[in-house]
Length: 86
Image 1 (cartoon, helix red, strand yellow):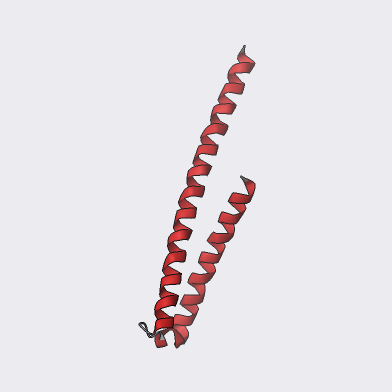
Image 2 (cartoon, rainbow, N blue to C red):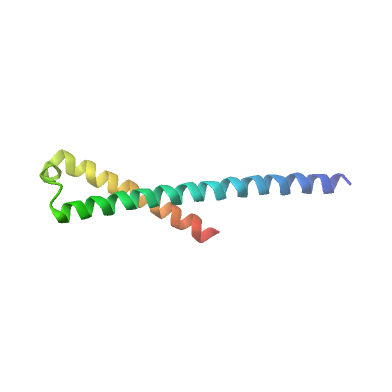
């Protein structure tokens, strides 16, 4: 009988971990959708000429901009791995 109690505890822990993992995947997906909408919106504004991005041509801002894009890309990679494992 003690063996079944241990199995129940392991199953409960696995269920809690799976719920946390699913919530994390949903939150990460929502964040990536939000960031994607912002990036597309900024791109459209640049194409329409509403925003002048001469500021990005400065060396300091280029490295910051590249770092932000790299960070978003890494988060996207993590989200892809999570979805692949599900």
